[in-house]
Amino acid sequence: MSSTRLFRAVARLPLSGKIGLVLVIFWIVIAAIGPFIAPYPPGSFSNQEVFSESSSEFWLGSDYLGRDVLSRLLSGARFTVGLSAVAVAIAASIGTGFALMAAVGPHWVDELLSRAMDTLISIPSKIFALVLVAAFGSSLILLTVIIAITYVPGNFRIARSLAVGLARLDYVEVARARGEGRLHLALVEVLPNMIRPLCADIGLRFVFIVLLLSGLSFLGLGLQPPDADLGSLVRENTSGLAEGALAIIAPAVAIASLTVGVNLLIDAATQGKAR
Amino acid sequence: MSAASPASRWRGPLQLVAKRIGLAFVTLGLVSAVIFTISGLLPGDAAQELLGQGATPEQIAALRSEMGLDRPALVRYFGWLRGIVIGDPGKSLVANMPVADIISERLPNTLVLAGLTTLFAVPIAFLVGIWSAVTRGHAADRALNIMTLAMVALPEFLVATIAVLVFSVKLLWLPSITIVPQDPTLVEFLRAYAMPVMVLGVGVIAQLGRMIRAAIIAELDRPYVEMAVLKGVSQPRLIFRHVLPNAVGPIVNAMALSLSYLFGGAIIVETIFSYPGLASLMVNAVTSRDMPLLQACAMLFCATYLFLVLIADTVAILANPRLRQG
Image 1 (cartoon, rainbow over the protein chains, first blue to last red):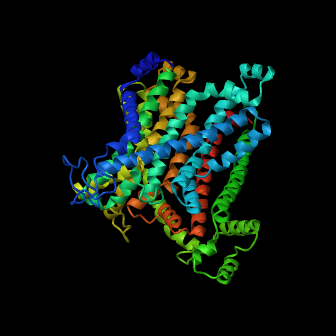
Image 2: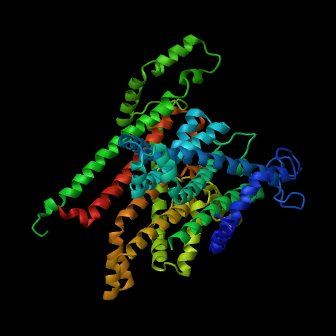
Image 3: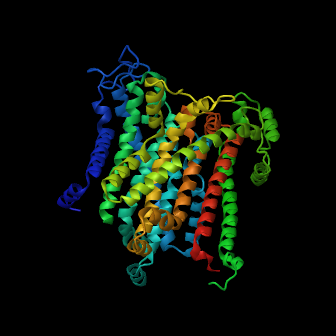
């Protein structure tokens, strides 16, 4: 897509989609440069007062130990956005990879994969993630893998129905008759034609993953200290709830602006196509 | 068609339902194998972990045989499965009480919370779904779309935090933790449950409302609706007599998903309000690595989910007149 077409596509988005796009870009930038623009080191006790109000020195006040909330939020966002992005990439690679195998492979492969994924999808994702965390623990890498695995079956289901539909079309039959191998069929003929709906699914799954990760961290089962994502920030400051401290509201609103932004963008982008 | 007796008209659908019931049991069996493999076989040695680093090999061996960990994996799996099926899933490692007792103590609380939220949220979800479907493309629909889209993506702890700030900190109307009162008056009861029900309701209303809208709109585009409009059928009659009966399938399916969320997914809400339900019990089981309790909770949630989906499938099959020709 050339840059002018991209620009036009953005200009055509409804207002809600533009807001979503701005929020998404904002959080990607924050995840990339957040720790470098933080005014204080995230772990330093820079304020005498705990749960202080917003001030020119501490834009978002201080947390339950007197640390700068803005600095902690800037480095927490990197974990939330980064870890979720890696997890969704793993989930989509495995799910879509299996889906392509099911679409171009022999029939028994499809049967086997579909049965297995149907079983896994009958375990609600939060429950599945909790069982995995209980069994394996939640180090940074394990947590990423656990969250990715939790969302493989959902992505497989969508990708398989797209891929199987495409694999039945004439042009794929022609390629097959030409003697192209299965790998070529999957990657060159089928995959490029399912990218667009697949992107919408990946975006939605990213939202689920952000919510699941923050939820786990909020429960104390996600990222372990000293690392802290946005959900951990909400958890550690729950004692400030009774006084309405910024330290608890800011990270919760940050998560919401990320997930709502992605949702608005996807909704606007997919509706534009349907009409 | 009129020649077919009522009994034979229902044969096709009933066979389909029987097949779905069989399939649900097979799936539940497979799910139990997955859960047991992940939580019972893969993670190291429970006996070693329980006794800690200082334990002698003899102590570990004794506890292993007491817990039955020295038996082959398949024997352990079927022993465990038998326990789940007959309602005795073993003893909690932490509380040292039968798991069945712990769960039956918490179960009524979860059912009350899920029931109240259903009563509160489902009618509103229908209202939202129907309203935005009939005003499709207009300002009301667009506003509702953005609102529900945002509500779906809100983390529950943000909604709960805002609710606590508004209703218990600023207005001082409601308690910020949910203590289930003994022999409550109606007002006490409602005050205790108002906040968790509201917070859970936000997600359900948004999710279910969106799916109801989609189901109705899919029907509105069909020729029979145009026919009814041309005949001069009024709009309420069109929606309630013509469209909704045809949209029953996807709507009951959406309701099954929402109800299963209320049953097992209320993890965050139960934790925030310190509500003694099943979901927070499962979180405790994860924190303390109490595997028998964890496995029983997980199986209960999966079984409920499959049961609700089965009910939805059954309703959809029986409500579909096209399958009833025999």
